[in-house]
Image (cartoon, rainbow, N blue to C red; front, side, top):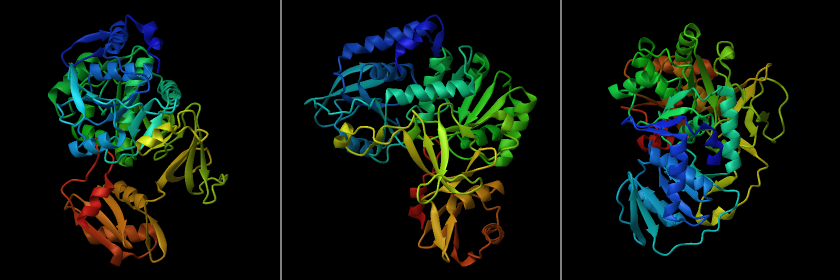
Length: 469
């Protein structure tokens, strides 16, 4: 996204740090330009570790505008995984938050909280002109598989989000999500695009300082994943002084419907809105949203496509389904769809071949009003007694009964992970058998777990659960 777009907001405050340091848009534009002194060649590949700081935002925007391609890594990524990624992609520069000792790289500078390392023997990376940004599909870096995004993708999605969330230059948000997560990064892009104000903080909901920022800066937009809103509810958010909030927004998974009803009720009484959103990094972040005035009637729906996007359901032969309430794979088309996947350095030359189309891997249907619903993941299926059983449907059903759980399948068994002793296994089995109308009692196994493993963005890490079986 071209930072020149921000020129019209020069006098506005763009960022406020935890130390109450204020940066106007004019300051931001000037500081973006000053990073050019490092003199990184165009189409260089760089590693940029995320941090919820002003300097990260300056670096990110400088790279986008200088035709430098960053791979954004989570600041908490395992060091050994980082080394494997360095070996695979061989970036010319690494912007790290900690001191590193990596062969063939030397420390050339330190800027604010970043250590800048340069590859001793620079590589002339062959990178497609379509590719401007590389991100992990999950907000972590457990795999070398990355999503390649273009400037067109970023700008298209930014404009769509601003439109349906009705963001203005008067709005104020704060960093509640990691900026290595496409959802977290989109919050920065959208509020800057409209000339809004962003409070940069690493403080969590559990810290007193977070709520002081909330009160002092009169936050109007708050973003989170379903787990965020569970925590906020347990912390008694409705009893706090949050009258400044205009919009709550959730993405990153399905939210428990009883809790969603509570937020709807609160918003209805306090002239606020709660927006449920659906997206994937492969679509630069957002695919659909549920308008607040439809939330009560369409609860559980992912809503309608974002402005400029198009949603359909495909059958097993990849033909468009025209009959409502018929399950198939959710298919999206829009200018925000990624260029391609990148799995190794040689892939960087790849060009777009998907015609801006994305098979999401999610199963779902649309109702008579063309509102879309997710029923599960295409690959999250276990076969028992010849029946294909959706793990996501079982998991969501139990969540609707206030049973926090995670489900995986292996060797024709359904494994249910629960972190509470208050539920009786026999009752849960009866609920499941009744729900799917098949008796699979002998094929259900329960495993007690202290806490369910999730990524920094709140998504379930199902692969870690297989270690317990």
